[in-house]
Length: 157
Image (spheres, rainbow, N blue to C red):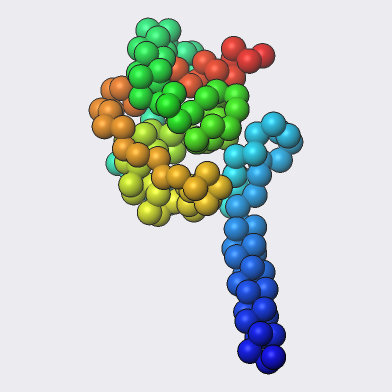
C-alpha cells in the first residue's frame, strides 16, 4: 500500500514541477485572441542569438520588398502559419509588434540556433509542440518576408 502512495506522490510532484516550468512561458497581455507566449520587456533576453545582429527597417514599408516577401511567405510559411489564428505555429499577423526585426530575421535564417538558445523560442516549442524547420531562405528573402510581415498590423487597423 505504501508503494502506491509513493507512486501517486511522485506523479503529483512531477505534475507540479512541470506546470511551474511551463508556467514560465506566459501569454502576451492585453490581446485575448493571441495566446502566443511572450516575455515582458524587462524579461527579454539581452543576448542576440543568430547570424543577424542588426536590421535597419526604416519607418516606411518598401512595397516591392513586401510584395516579394508575400510570395515567399505564401510558398514557405503558410503550411504552418496563418496571420490571425493559431495553426501549427503561432499567428504572424502582428508578430512585428511582439518581436524585433533582429529576432524575426534570426528565426527565419538561423532557426536551429534560436531553438537551442533563445528562451522565447523554447517557450514557443513547449506551447506548439513543434520546432520550426529551417526553410532554407537567403538573407534577402528573409528581409522581404520581414517587410511583408510589417504590412500586417497596418492592414488590420
